[in-house]
Image 1 (cartoon, one colour):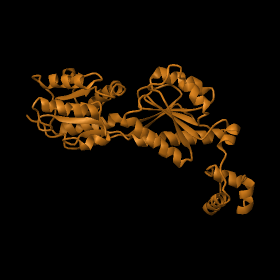
Image 2 (cartoon, helix red, strand yellow; image 1 turned 90 degrees about the vertical axis):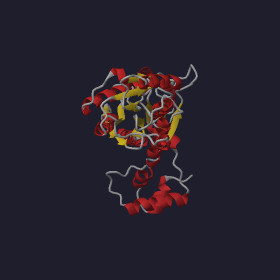
Image 3 (cartoon, rainbow, N blue to C red; image 1 turned 60 degrees about the horizontal axis):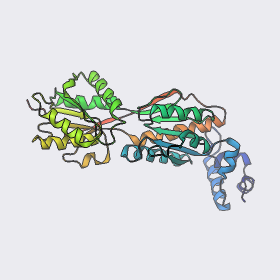
Image 4 (spheres, rainbow, N blue to C red; image 1 turned 45 degrees about the vertical axis):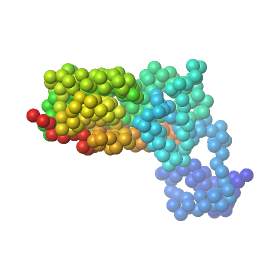
Length: 344
């Protein structure tokens, strides 16, 4: 078995230098790029393989980042996981996905995370009760949690979210410039249950900032099923003072609104402008292409992984930083063909 002392001898450097290079801990240390590359080349030549099991026995942690999401079958969480994976790979960490949805009754997420001795856990849209229980377990072993999604906020966690309010303000200002005054809010539909509560608050705050009057008569809460959203939307559009534009809690509900409008013999955007939320892959493939508030799910995931890696490395040196804080990344409005001038 190749040891660091073997690499040090052949590369002509100290064992400490080899350790720093192979453990990717050269920040703040005066090791030239030429030396770093020489150590890596010799390690490859000799066939060195880092023993993560031995490392975990010494440090009490693995180079593994956990990921747990309320749902596993929606694009938002898949893109967030992709970002976590990319960020972990850059830091020479790996990712383990933990089940939440449809887990067996006796499954304990917190215990499972501790058993893996994670470097940290990324929690996407987990309910507050579950998140608190998991955190109680992880705190005992100094395993940090990054929360994403903004639904649940638990003290002592790092919360990474998109500035969706600013994105919604951009969308509402765009509609105002197009002459829209009666702007409605639509929520509900498949996979929107975890988004609706916080997104309605986001809409109302964005309306306040944009100077848009919210009329509760122009809001729709259609439930979690497609027929409910479509029927509620048709009733809204059949009213005497229907909205000329609507902002929806997610891109999926926006597509249902477009379909409901057509069933009501209304054209999008001539009779009704529609804006989604999320910036999902299919949004620019709809007919017409959907204007949306794009949320950078992958960037959120990459940042979450980077924060866990930085915390893990600093904690190992006794320099762990404060963790109870928020990080906001920008969300932006994307203008497409589903919005147009308001008809007088």
